[in-house]
Amino acid sequence: MTDAPDRAPGASARFAAVLSYARPRDVPPGIDPDEFRLALLEDTYEVVAGLELVTSALVLDPPDQPDAEAVTWPGTPIVREATLTGAFAALHALGAESAALVAPDAPDLPPLLLGKLFRALGGAPSAACQAEDGTLVALAAALPLPDWLAAALRDVDLDTPGALARLRAAAPRPGLMPQGPGWHRQRTTGDLRLLDPGLEGWENTRALLQGHPLSS
Image 1 (cartoon, rainbow, N blue to C red):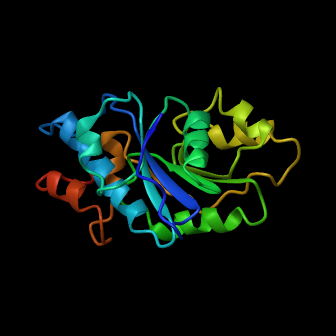
Image 2 (cartoon, rainbow, N blue to C red; image 1 turned 90 degrees about the vertical axis):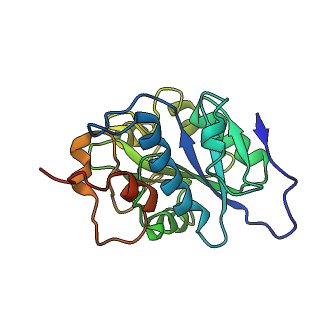
Image 3 (tube, helix red, strand yellow; image 1 turned 135 degrees about the vertical axis):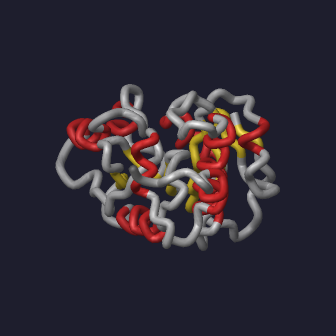
C-alpha cells in the first residue's frame, strides 16, 4: 500500500526509501527510546531527501506511524509494506526504475555512498552497502527485482546477520551484487563511538546526545 501524490513530470526514476520499523532500541541511559529512534530516522531521511535526482520515500512497518511520517517533507511517498520485496514493488509502482532501501539508523551516512550504489546498478541488477556488524546499511536494485533476488529477500532483510553473503549465494552467478563502500549503523549503545562529532549532519541525533559521551 502506498500514499503518494501523482508523480510529477520529469521526476526522478531513482528512489531512496528509509525504512521505519518502530522497534525497541538499545539506547543510552537517560534518553527516551522513541525520541532516539525518531532522531536517527529523521537524520537518515534528511540524507536521502538531500540526494540530487533521487526521489525520497519512507517505508513503514507497522503501517501506522504518524510520528515517523511527521519527519518527512510534504509530498514524500509513504509505502506501507512489511517486506523488502513488497517495498521494492511498491516503489516500482510509483515509477521507480531503480531504488535503494536504507536502514533507519544511519544518521551520518555520506550521500556519496548511496550515489555509488546507484552507479553500480549500471552494470549489475543490485548493489549493497554493508555495515560493520554484518547487517546492511542499504540495498539498491534495478526494478522490477530479478526473480532470484525477490525470492532471497523472503528470508533476508537489512538486519539479517551476513545478509550480503546470503544474497550473493542466492545469485545465479557471481557479480550480480557488487559491494559498495561500507559504513556503520546505530544499533547498540556501543555504536555511538562510530559517530564523528566533526562530520557534518546528524543534527537531531547530535542534539539528543548532547552531554552523553560518544565513546567510553
